[in-house]
Image (spheres, rainbow over the protein chains, first blue to last red):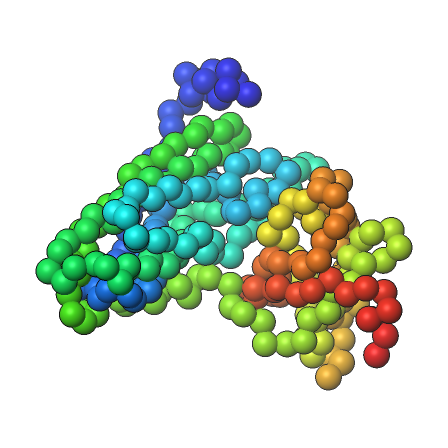
Length: 218
Length: 43
């Protein structure tokens, strides 16, 4: 596969993909956990991949380099899109792609100190061919006696978080049939179409969900 | 609303919870639900 990717890189320019960290506080306090946005801006018409890439592709990943005691959660991915190429169904992101991670400041963090939040985002960008890429993200954060928001970045982060899937407020039931296939029922919802993106490739086949029925049932 | 989802050919089939994004129209919902045993699905 590596040889294939290298040959592709020789005949096609890598897409322009930039990465940016959006920290909504100018000062953070020891012991607090706060959200941080990570934006990838992917040149159209290329795409990168969701946590489960589907039939092809590689998950977009983040690696963090922080001082002792600082912790970063796994990234929360925005809602994916289906990318269908013949029988191949992939789960992708296009354009501006906004992830959110949660950063925890250790209790031992000293007020008055500064910390470099630094990480590397890596992706596989594809359209007719695929080219891997990565970029460093970085932001200096001051530790103080209270959390002080950066208002401009707080607004940006709120917009970024709006792209995350919402927690469902309806009763959901999932069960298996004798074949091992799943049924997913959402009560009180009627829709003309729906699709389920499984977080793991080990659970559900990425192809189209079989539409069984739609009705308002309480 | 009920969807049929085909089991993956990968994995060992031992799925206790199903997590993922349910797209209904233009809305996207995070689903994290236990996989019920057959006897638990009776109402």
